Image: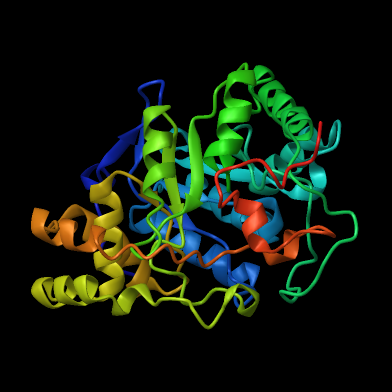
Amino acid sequence: MAEKMNAGLVPTRALYTGERIPCIGLGTFGSDKYSPEQIAEAVYGAIKFGYRMIDCAAVYQNEDKIGEVLRKVMREGVVKREELFITSKVWNDMHGQGKVMESCKKSLADLRLDRIDLYFVHWPFPNYHAPGCGKDARNPDSRPFSVEEFMAAWRQCEELVDKGLVRYIGMSNMTIPKLEAVLPLCRIKPAALEMELHPSFQQPELFDYAVAHELLPIGYCPIGSPSRPERDRTADDVADGELPAITAAARAHGIHPALVCLKWAVQRGQVPIPFSVKEPQYVSNLTCVTEDPLSEEEMAAIEKEDCNCRLVKGQVFLWEGANGWEDLWDVDGSRAAWKAE
């Protein structure tokens, strides 16, 4: 095991309450390639090394194993509960009345926690797919985004805060039109917006919108998710690690291109949640954000690499009659694909 890092060296980011959380976390989605035991072992090693933010979700099917690790590190005195920031998410098939509470209580039991720090609505609609399905899979019950249905799920999330089961609630995989429709209706505002963010897909408009509304951007696929499932791959995808500005900065700093992506993310202001089960990788991922920052010139060069390359297109969530994955993301800036209320 690498020598333990002083977690206090890791920069922090502020939530709208003023509470500060780590500027980087550990993702736990195994991309259908790693077992729950492998991922839990990585969580154990990562926390021992110095990670304090762990990003979980019910649909990842590993929260019970991660919970065993969380209990273990606290029993061993590695970390106190209040030093950890644990997130989880309600999956799409649990949006119905009473189901969000049920899902949260199961995650709490699996994670061996009394409270979850930040609880997300994983996707803004009840469409779901079987784990490991192909990109052409379709659920006949899938339907377009509905403000009414989303807010019914959000009201249940607000109840979780009221009951002290979660500390903050957040949204994920949203768009500006969707946020404009639902934010005014929220009694408890979201603390964070989890979204795909990496150098070839910087989402500047959505990023700026989130920051302006005090939604901390939490970025998944921060290095371009080279191990993502086959269903999320297309011939037009761009490899972030091969972008000229990334490779130039990697040479200048003598580091792997993936670490340049993480430095860029943290210096930009988002919270990346890279996934890795390999100790040298998750150790380097945390260490890199505490030293040798990118220059202003390197940051500016990476900003120019944005080519709107969305990797997680969400085809498996489409409904009958949808034109394509673009309908999930309101790419024309309108609500044309939404369910009529």
